[in-house]
Length: 352
Image (cartoon, rainbow, N blue to C red; front, top):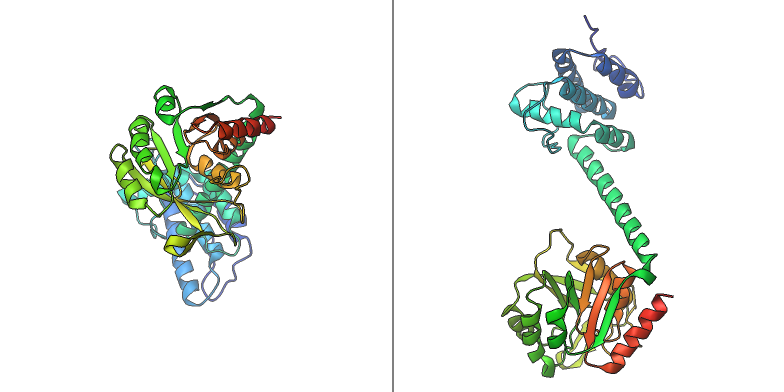
């Protein structure tokens, strides 16, 4: 017969520092009877409620409760359907057993390693289930971010081996034979160029994802023309922070951002704000040029290493450089032979 968990009495016993590690973890590891663990959960939960009423620190008790819940989940028989998604909906089940609590405790046991790591990392924060879930999600985001950074760095280190093509051609002739995963482009903004948005949309509709950076002076007309042939998904905000705001004199506006109209579908979620570095408004190679830092942010949000980016209005080649630095192949064109020459020169220098 297993010994009962020694639980301090409210108002009489002091709770030793590290009680959840020195007492609860060893006790829980010895248990083979789920009912004994249920009783311990109920006892510790009641103690936690009493200490909370008296204004006492209940962190150790909450951590102890989490350990007991994990152990109870381990002792429950397997549930049909396999591994479940971690759900920490309520903060305490009070030891009551029903179908919902059994499912949730099984999930706690299945994710034991994540929960134990989170419990050890939580300094100064109450280990409620909601707080544990935040910690776990934060760890997952950090791990995923690090993984992506490694991929980006590995891809960028081989920029001299990444294929690219830039031609002097009209997009109407270039796009039909083009193979790419996404179009990321910045067509000219003046009113006289509005008709090209209709022709561009006709040619771009076969691409799975199309991102078009646009000005706002004629935005309704641009939207109308693009949406005739493309399926609108969302508008991203491309921020250009710093003191070098573009002045739109006819509208009397200093603008610090641009819309990026997104069409088509993507299997991944994405944030709808990207930005360039502060005061990184590079117009040295083209009057309508964008910054490499801003376009890199856009490329990373919309693509993965190894994919191919197309820009049929290549201009000074910023999208090409951003794509190659991010480990993406690039194809592009422009009707301006000087712009194409500039882009090819930039790519050659980037690959050295």
